[in-house]
Image (cartoon, rainbow, N blue to C red; front, side):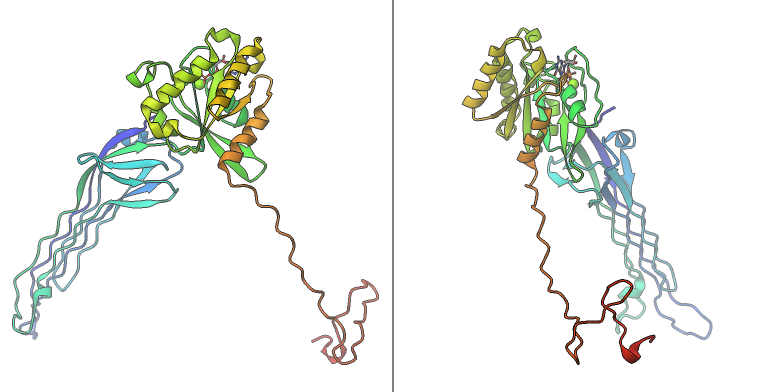
Length: 375
Ligand SMILES: Nc1nc2c(ncn2[C@@H]2O[C@H](COP(=O)(O)OP(=O)(O)OP(=O)(O)O)[C@@H](O)[C@H]2O)c(=O)[nH]1
Ligand SMILES: [Mg+2]
């Protein structure tokens, strides 16, 4: 199950109480105050773990508490600090305050840590209140309560390129051809029910991530079909690839499909619709009528968008598309830096200024000279 939104409640540990005690020992009259401080409560820390892809593990485990600090004790013993509670979240999680609606944090790096609730401070023991004129204090503090919060976690997948288009446009087939992802593919609409990510490899070191999301249909922003809820996963991509099925089987006009999807993107968010976009005509092998492709090409040109035509079945245009995506999102590859020039070391004899003697076996300059030999 793909879970991209959960609510959790967290409570950091309370601080331990400060202690009220006096040193009582044989032969030590008026031993003085000796109550130790309470320990601090444990924080609740959210940690981004790249091994999690959904928030499912938090859906049935929505409460997290830091350990409380132990109370202070006599003989000036401070209480133990409470252990922090760590809550693992996937990279790409955005944290909101569930009550105020305020955005609190955004996890973008693996291993990133954020203290979501701070543990309470331990109370001071009576030893801390002693002064020159107040030598037997009985004041001592209770521990302070740990912070308590309700959070809403929202997962936004971190992908570089987002695929958008009608159901059946060939989004999943494309991602299965250019990456190692193996999504479900079938010739009925809404095959893909949850977002899928695929890593596209270019050479040995360069790669980018493509997100395949469920298809959009007219009035998706009103909840028709699967709605536009999945669009939030491509809000952070740097490039949208708008896939339009140009095969004759659809019975629709590709230019109309394009406009419908653009309308839905705009209804969801203006920023999303304004993202850099390329237009990709799919199923080229099944397009008998070249006019359909040409019309879409003209429309793309009119809107100032780059146009590609591919077939995931024959593989036509896929390589070109892959590199076109990379070009738009990856920094340009650095040319290999030329070898720095190193002058030849001077191997001449410093006394006689003669060239070095050569080893008769290897032809290499011989290092051993005179008495230094064998040292
Ligand atoms: N002839 C041909 N058929 C294709 C091509 N690409 C995809 N198809 C077929 O089109 C159908 C739909 O493909 P999908 O990849 O599942 O489409 P989708 O856009 O992911 O659809 P949803 O997940 O429903 O949104 C499948 O039957 C594919 O086999 C292509 O390049 N040529
Ligand atoms: Mg699909």
